[in-house]
Figure 1 (spheres, one colour):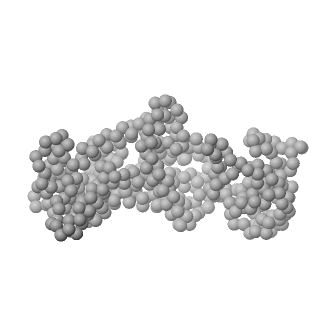
Figure 2 (cartoon, rainbow, N blue to C red; figure 1 turned 60 degrees about the horizontal axis):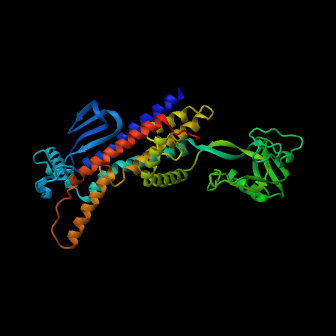
Figure 3 (cartoon, rainbow, N blue to C red; figure 1 turned 180 degrees about the horizontal axis):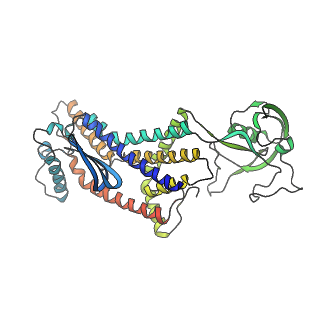
Length: 438
């Protein structure tokens, strides 16, 4: 049941993200006087639609995207001074201009999209991706500030009774020959809250862990809060081989994927994990870092698609760095919701964070400078603006609008490629899915 709820939440948020993306295009377009004839969520056969004013609003059968139809997306033949088409490429562009021109009602040419200034075109085309960015930020703020995230606290959850080798199997029992762990020998108990370590007041588990590692085998004073009172304990640490972790607490590996270890001070305590609300600044920092990490994935997308093809053909196992599609993200949502070992708040925050990552991916993917993506229209608008500015500096007359219809054949090609990649992702996410936790 929990998995079903997770998938349902994913579908609702995905449809909402698509709908708001198109709102980001539609609202500024209408604000600038462009007639919007259609606002649709989904593709394929229309399931429902209603006409309000001059716009038809509707939902289509395939929730794989959406669109708003802006009249006059492409300039007319007269506006660009297009010659009679001779090649296939020119014929496709001419057909696109003709179809766009047919949507312009008599006396309505001033309301065509191609008539907008460059700044207004940029606002319209960037409105959709920016809406996805805003959705991602809101979801992360709700997850991190409103709910909180699991965080290692200064409260002791476990106390090692002895010192065991790093490579010992999990759950290895202590024997009489094993030396007692420093924390157990000093009298530290589960439930104690660490207040001070070696004369330094502690505020976070990361700080405690760093102090312990750097202490080596010295004898230190550990102050804990127990039953409302502070208790000073004396612990003689030992040096033990332990994994090296980064600032996020993740194990560091070498070039061969092996865990890096080094000899550090060892006390023998484990932290309790608590759901702690973060600051707005922390949530925005997570959003900024996630945007940067997602951008690096988008930049390397061709290589990742090639890796996915190779893995799918050869039957290899996909790792956590593999790209996933909507089916894969939906599976993640179901797995997160089904984690009954985690508190509901933790699962809710993880689900919202996953949906935020999806919106960040939509934001950056749509900025790829290729038609029919929004980034392709942005590049065209910038090119047209640059030509106008250059003509102005030269004292020349206003140049004709950029013939953006010339990019329609390229848009068809990109659409076919994206469709193929989408089908590959659906197949891979069903047959050979990426699972949380490997």
